Amino acid sequence: MSYSAADRERFIGWLKAKYPTIEDLNKAWATQRWSRHLNSFDEVELPYGEGPGPGERYLDLHRLWSDITIPLLQDLEEIRERNTPNLPAVSNLWDTNPHRRFDISAPTKSM
Image (cartoon, rainbow, N blue to C red; front, side, top):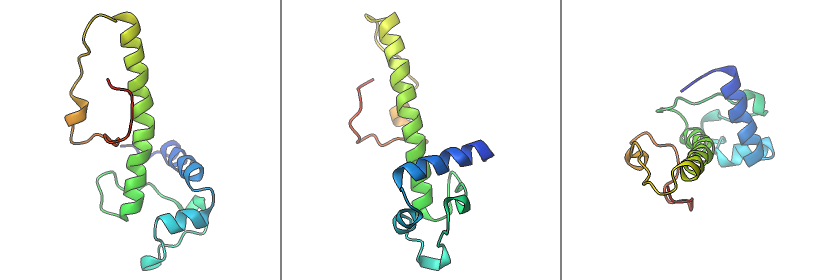
């Protein structure tokens, strides 16, 4: 987990793509509770990776990680298939890792 300015900007960019307006983000994050209203995307901070914090922010951070992780894993699988098409895949059992950051119920290419 990194709290760098670049990672914060990446998170904000991802949020802007998902929630086109700050009003959309406020609604999704239920910011009317406990005076958490955001006036602009510049006010967004990275939540703690393991909580606590507003659950909506935490969930979106994990969704960002999923959106970053899955394409990388798919790229690795394509490289493996290209270079060793007749050999089984060996992994670190990512699907059972308690810190995985992607939705295993989402339809993705089997690895």
